[in-house]
Amino acid sequence: MTFRDGVEADVDHIFLGGLARKIVYEGREIPAIDGELIDRERRNGRELAETVTLLVRPKDVPEPEAADEVRFGGRILRVERFVIEGALVRLELVGNEAPVWS
Image: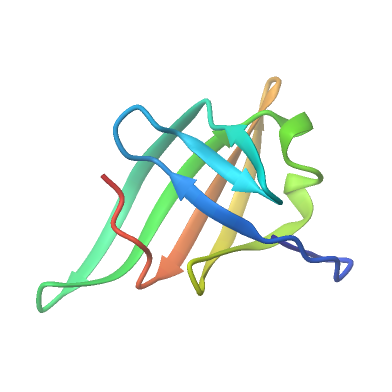
């Protein structure tokens, strides 16, 4: 994630397939409470962009509200918006040629 103050930390993987729902953040596994594909844009059968929401506990991801983007696999998923839902934070991620979520 790239924070607005310029500090960067890589997110190695985001898993939303099957029962595996977690972020590997600075080598640490962070459980995602829930993950949901909310939009998928295709053109000529090619995956162009996806919007994914990822629900995490705020204590697991430092300053999620300050994150501009999540980097992984050489791609960047932009944090489109975040919503605090009680004790949880929902990050809405958008990426061009984002990985296929199952």
